[in-house]
Image (cartoon, rainbow, N blue to C red):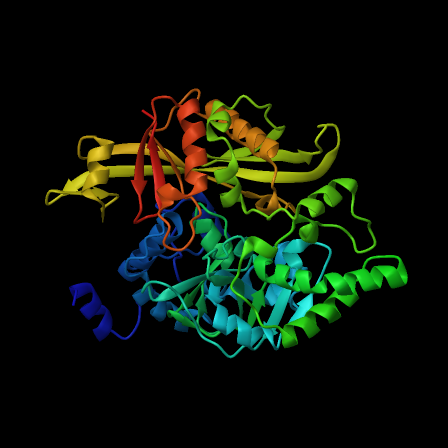
Length: 502
């Protein structure tokens, strides 16, 4: 057992003095120092050795996803929640993301934190029998809700804690896509005693604004489960076709939201789910249309084709990557949201048009973020390290720099912005224009100061290697066109693709 662990086992509690992290010494990033200043000014207090250790662990986790011994120390933070709620209690969050406050999935959605994950088909079959179905106009809010499911969710890995977010929409983006498992969202009440970290404090530490809080322990008892896997809902839609036709014949209009809710709840009670598959999924079933709207001629064409709905990852494999890589399509309009601490953020005003390219069918705003990274590459006992952490020997050779060198880079992230259904866009022209836009933004950002590295994390399915994902192939195509000298390193362990630009 490590000496650090033995030391932790023999002492009674963390030594945090009278105030937790009440030291503003310039060591932390500006948002964190601003957060602490607002909380304590002018009565500061030097951090103890224990406080410095835990703060360092939190920074490494929130910024680099390196958990280290954080799980051990979080257990000691839990008893301190009542004494320092503004830092440690998720219920003290100053504002809750709108997607959580206004959700129709559960009442008082802002009182919960969420985690996108998967569950086995057998477990989903049992739970869905007691589900209540909701069918708002927007796809993202449709789903089968099971309150008090009486199950245990076990997080992968052995970090000793599990991450949750108060942003319901954000958590839904991280649902698993394992082929034979069902995508779900787990919800835990913010009052759960095992939760620690106010998301406001987490966001001030992290370079990712994910409204994150941490559940101490690997086993979680969720208070609510939401099954909103489009492949499962497609099974219900398929069974609903005769009923929809009957409603239309009788009333002359589509079923109302309330009627859909009643039908879905009754369907869930008697359902016998089959393995999740895109075979039953039709684009027409997943359009953001109000119940009384008639299906447009374009959607009618899609309906006639019975086209399989594709996730973004699947769309990538269908696109001629060489054409995307050229980046010759007209970029979308975009706006710089401002640069902060060397990070940058843009809103891309994406849109899907009809076949004649003269009518906008859907507006799809996208957020593009570049998160600044600075790494010190060194060697310790002959082993390569990055910021003091052990790394693969191959990575050190790939960087090909002298020990002690500091390099810079950006992690590129793009996601939904506003109420878009980015993950459901099945339009090749859209993807061409999107990649041209990203290419133009990056070339503009790096025109005066080219970073060493460009990093991104492709979504993958199950045990699929990241280099086999469609997203990786798409990114590789356009990056090599935008930056001809780029060299690539694949980190399967960290699930990242790293391009060395110079």
